Length: 134
Image 1 (cartoon, helix red, strand yellow):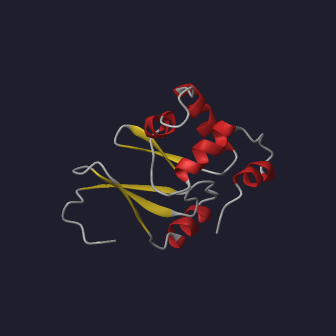
Image 2 (cartoon, one colour):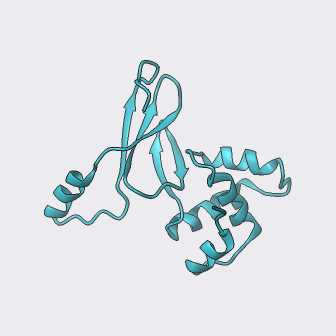
């Protein structure tokens, strides 16, 4: 199923720009990206794009709820996966792996304390070279 990126942006009240479309096209494949990785990827096809333009697009997309970010390993990472899940930062490999776990009890415990999570982001640091396939 092809995602209509322009419509996705319009639904959130955003102006449709080539830069925002390019960032989403890069990220829609899935995974975790640093701003520098997205910039490097886009530079191949959009030689005039600047790093600040990429970061401005990422900030706008995050505020609109299209992507989210988290900190791990001293960097900010961006992903399009919005539902609650665990991001495992593999210290030995430098990779980030998504692990699906039921985070409902965590959300419930937070809500019982009067905390309404807007973005539930769980980061686990681990050595992954011996990890079972997830």
